[in-house]
Length: 186
Image 1 (tube, rainbow, N blue to C red):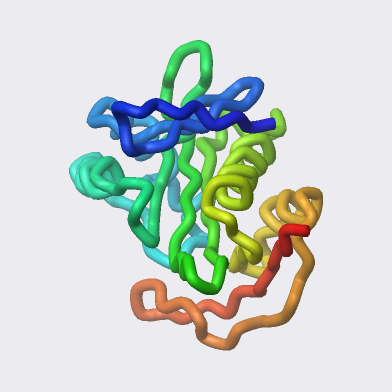
Image 2: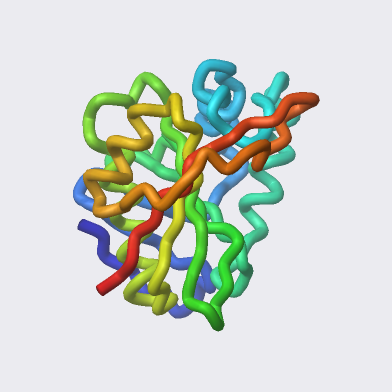
């Protein structure tokens, strides 16, 4: 499970789980994040196209590193707790603090799949959102063919609320129709 490390000097919350450290992005995370965002197969279910070059991913790392806990969108590098290697990303976005709701996203390098790490990372993110941001409703918008992601959120207590949301995502010149899953904090 996740614990929040309260570092008074840093405005960015670090989330620790049994095997992971969810932390602010750093320049050296470009290769680890590119293994995710540059992977056409992984990105086929995302709402934007894969990064074609490491320079494109470096631009994302610079953008993601600038977010702070006060933004409506915050991304964490998912790092292996032993090596501190970036192996993925979790984020929340479309946060509406007054309505106590937000949306989450996540991606993990394929060489780390099958170990329960993304489940651990998303659970840590959810705990942070509920405990520290007082979030009541967490949503995940998932492509209906993304069976591993659907299994992940279902195991974590999300329920399918509907969809497909017709032509909800525009990716390049195409549209995708994902499903809506939600978790309600009790």
